[in-house]
Length: 284
Ligand code: PAF
Image 1 (tube, rainbow, N blue to C red):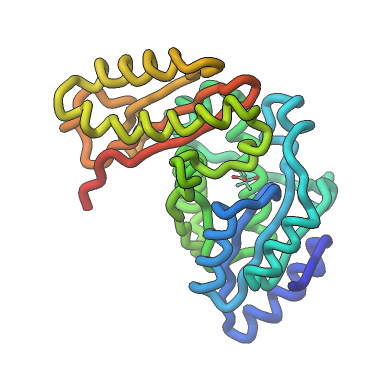
Image 2 (image 1 turned 180 degrees about the vertical axis):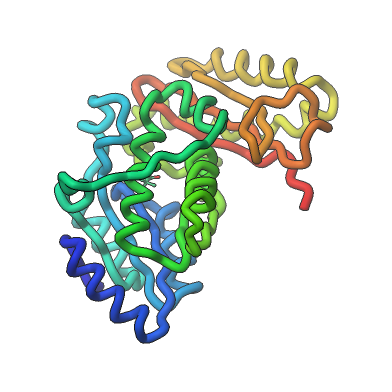
């Protein structure tokens, strides 16, 4: 695997590959890689000539400085995993490379999409995500960008950003990878206490029950029931569980209201915040 730390060196390499007609698949990450990331890199590798992965813990997207400080950093393990996966290029830049002094990042208009859920509870978070993904895309100019469904609102915003940029990059969204007991893989899972780890799968179990419940009850009743159930779990503090239109991310009040419905949740388990989601309906 080739490792680049400098933007100009990575760009020189990628331009040569593009000139040969090779296609580039790109997976941005913040490291602490797990099988969820591996699934993105594997798909990027399978669908392109060159798989590029970046590791950059982006300070501008952490609305909580303590979360940034505690964010797991596992450089040697990450490099091992990427090597095993046959990833071709690792971009491992410093903050100075990603954000040089003269950098100008355009602003994008997402309407109400970035005001709800993560956007509401983590003020400034999406400004940082959009800023870094814009910059990383500008550096790598990939044919395809690989992101996970686990960050549902994140990939929705990036989809709109790419559209507004008139970019030719295709966004490929990959399914959530879960532990056997249903817990969605996340770099933050390693920080769960044993007790909180044992209870964490209740989040995905609750989300999986929603479709059944929605056959019998209104969206509002189902949402209240789910939040009440999650609130009873020791050490759990649900921040939100919203049942939303999958395109606009606005809450729905009737299950027949939209052809694309998703339930998204953020739950504090002790001092770790876990997010998860489930697509409840998607009519093609
Ligand atoms: O999902 C993540 O890991 C990050 O938000 C991303 C997309 C790598 C941007 O820093």
